[in-house]
Image (cartoon, rainbow, N blue to C red; front, side):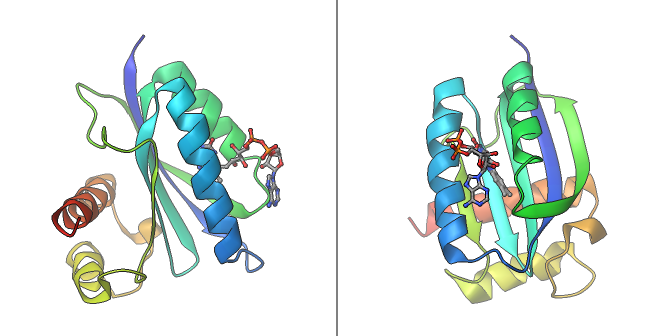
Amino acid sequence: MTLCRLVYSSQGLPSLHYPDLMDIMEKSEKNNALVGLTGMLCFGDSMFLQVLEGDRQAVSNTYHRIVKDPRHCNFAIIECVEADQRLFGAWSMKTVQLGSYFPDRVKDIVIKYSPTSTFDPNRMNARQCLQFMLDLQALYKEMG
Ligand code: FAD
């Protein structure tokens, strides 16, 4: 078993609405827990940014299932690396709709790593994407 981390972005289709996010959140938490995956999924300004970490084969199987999901498109793998440790080990999949909670603090984190206040992972490098999600994780832990 080899620990790995995959970060990718995608674009939500215009038909994607809040109930879809709830469905994705529920299925992710359930499925990922079964195969020992952890991570975070962010959604804002029509864009998804997700980190998946765990056994390389489990990450790969899950990613290939996710890209078949008709609710999003325009996938970009941002990073796929061997990992020394998990960075999001507390969550089988924390799903964050940007701006729903602590909007001012989240906006600060977006602007910290982005050229504009629009959330667009395609305009962030791999380090910025990862650090963005780590800052969000710290915020959610701080705010309980
Ligand atoms: P089912 O729910 O039975 O789904 C079977 C098929 O139907 C799948 O191909 C599924 O994509 C499709 N489907 C299900 N619901 C809908 C719907 N409302 N509209 C259109 N098609 C639908 N899954 C994970 O397990 N882990 C993750 O980390 C994860 N992250 C995701 C991130 C994003 C951005 C998106 C869009 C989806 C994510 N999913 C994730 C969901 C994943 O794509 C599959 O929908 C899910 O894993 C299938 O769950 P299931 O095995 O219970 O099958």
